[in-house]
Length: 192
Image: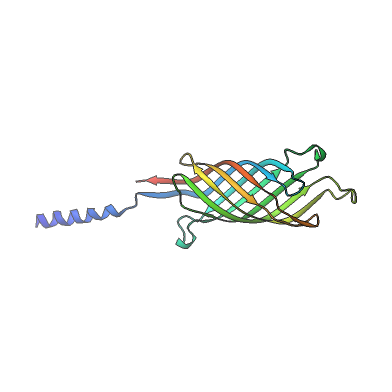
């Protein structure tokens, strides 16, 4: 009888081996900031400026949504103006959309995104209309990039984005450029 009881106790404690080795805690949010350099889409002008972003990931929800998330970003390109445009040239965007992040590969996580939002451009007034100094559009932006995890919660980001500004100056503009920055990941892995 004692031998059967010991066997039963050993059998019950053997089930505890199936517990996960880690759990995900915190909130599924990544917030970051960086510096962007963009060809603004006309006259071969390249502007630079600050960029901010926030990603909300769907970790721990439906299996079909694993890897998907929502990204919001804002960018203000105002530095590096050529002498002809001093003080009058600026391009700003505020966009949001879907992002898909693949699994980590040796601390590197590639992602792809498609954003939709609002873009505003300020420029020098053309000769035919001295009051036409700014315009705004709905903008679209496919892009991709890499996040590199340097610490448990710190990521370094390199991002490429190709924007579409329909119908600005009588034609479509296609600004494109790179963003480099640092993010803070509010998710935490708790090992057991």
